[in-house]
Length: 186
Image (cartoon, rainbow, N blue to C red; front, side, top):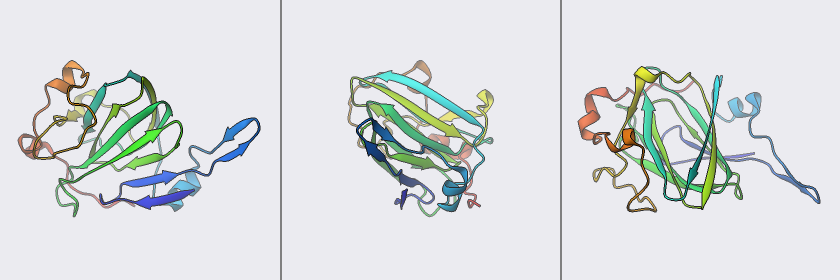
């Protein structure tokens, strides 16, 4: 397994070891000890799965105060995955990181608690799997508008398919009073 740091503090790109033979492929998608040694703390308490059509954009989501760390991956198709550092006091506050995650490249991203997360489907269909470090808490659900000009995220779609909730999120600046504070991992 190879772990690469990104420009966003605590956001990690994980490239699992892939074992190929005539039957296909095998990889570990999670191993508590190895991932902890790589700086990805647990425990993970909930797994989520979504399947979406081309052009669907889910995000930018976060929970506060019950922030969730997430380990995300794609099992079918391709998405453009985005993490935004919204943690007040973080050295990378206000910056974003984006990467293509696919069933082909099998990359994973660790999204630390306190960061906003979203993805856009760029294949016909995509299946998205993620582990969370805290349980879903409907009353703590928050979001930032996907196309906030201040963030200037380079999404690969101009008019995405959005949920009704994702259409109502406010800008990064308007959410200032609700944003989490940076808490060092570990």
